[in-house]
Length: 309
Figure 1 (tube, rainbow, N blue to C red):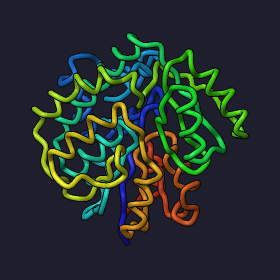
Figure 2 (figure 1 turned 90 degrees about the vertical axis):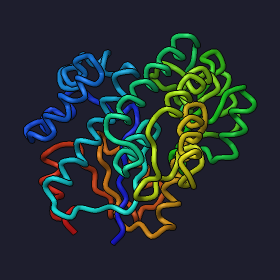
Figure 3 (figure 1 turned 135 degrees about the horizontal axis):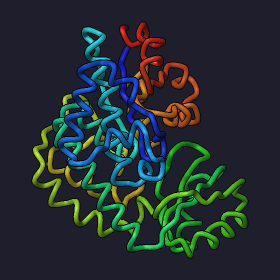
Figure 4 (figure 1 turned 135 degrees about the vertical axis):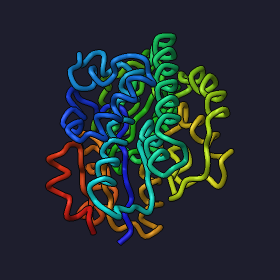
């Protein structure tokens, strides 16, 4: 069996995530360490809210990063010899995947995602952006809609779900173009800005120096990059791809297909909501039968036997 870990992206968060995990002393210490590194009571916001603050990009991204890393910490503590052969994460989850794979340590990854989240939040405030989910559109149709509407393709999540991103004023036009092209549904998303689009250019540029300074090494296991759908070949490329994914399309379906082609037979999703398991079901229904979603202690206890294989 070859196992890949999957880590959640922004949008999967909810108030209370991670609270039960702190029953484990090592994870309680991890959250205390994160509070000290970030310099504000981030764990309290994760556990108690308010939801509006948890949704803010500068809090949400570290919260999901720590939650995913905490679940991995639990698996490594409770299951002797727990192993995995690859890791991948959606958007900010790519950082959690790299931390899991040893590309950088927990603290380095946390500082990077906090910086990334803060920069993206600044870009959201400076631009009027929006996002539009296309249900039932294939990639060429989505690309055509984006081009005609002057916006970008943000996410290739799975067959039948592609997300566009760009100026909020262009979203109604994109809806009309989608309707004309026979797309089943085009739904505006309730987001703060145009993630993974040209409107995030200022965030990408400002993040580059942080990535250049960060202590980064080659991961112990392959980590497909969101921007390319395949793993980087060297450390310089890791830095470049992590920067480019701020404005570039998330090629999640390609990333999963790369893992499947490499022989992965079990997927373990660490994070809230089971979103990535849902995408996997659309990408490869058979593979989805071998996907475990773990977001809390109860999930871990339920699936510990499968994780012990």
